Image (cartoon, rainbow, N blue to C red):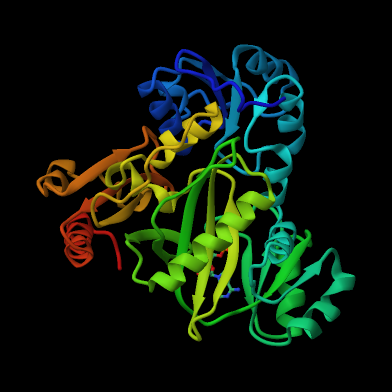
Length: 382
Ligand code: AMP
């Protein structure tokens, strides 16, 4: 199925696999533009289901539900990379699916994504594949130094990875991760972490959002600072690498690419997400077009919007840890530069992403001060 020659205009029906916060923000953006939206997610309380025209409450491999979705929609996208490959393949037989199942498959597997990134000219951390315990000694010999063992699939927010400093560590870590296929990666000395979020439409047009600098806490994104505090040359190189990946995969949709900037100044590909990204949430308030509207435009085969930054911004993630009781939002909103986004999740759990807010200010420094002040008021730990 192809799209692109004939754009899908408002009034058409778009589908999204997955009903989490990313699906919710996609759905809201699509509805603002006049599209109808079908969400597939088994959870009756899914954040995107609350705001969709139709919420199909079924599993991601439910063939009847997938066929129903294909019949209702003119194009379908996904909000999470771990959607079963066969579900995307099944949908793609009946309806335009973007990003393509092949591109999503690359992003699902750390070995594939790093190998493809190298083919597209990106540096990566040194890595060795581990299929089973027979690979451990060779992998350790290859990396031979401080390393991280990561599961090849299903890792996110720092989950599914363990620091390793010896062959004994590696054996124990592999056991701990359930002896599933893994990647052993050299542990690099990071100066900064940045991400490039871009959109590419079926015509091959690319629009870049400004590079974001990302800081994590306990493996989870804590804040994004935009513009990133990096040189223009570094930003240019990061955009260039992300564009090579997008073009190389003939990618359609919003793509997020995470890079490490090393102490020696090198830029290294870490991973990509075949969808809008937490580090792109600042675009909701600080860019002329946000990442979700861009996702709608790319999926519908429309021209992409202007991704220009309108204001310096710091995005702060809100995790369930501070929900005891739910924070006093009136105090947060007493700061006029703050824009609050909550995802409609009724149950707060530690580490669960409940929302975020964007701090807009005249300079990055002022935005950082606003972020710090409000984080302290909310009791977010440093
Ligand atoms: P990931 O799940 O690959 O995004 O890793 C989660 C976090 O672990 C990253 O944001 C980095 O802070 C850190 N990390 C991952 N890979 C490496 C590496 N090869 N060297 C140093 N730090 C890393």
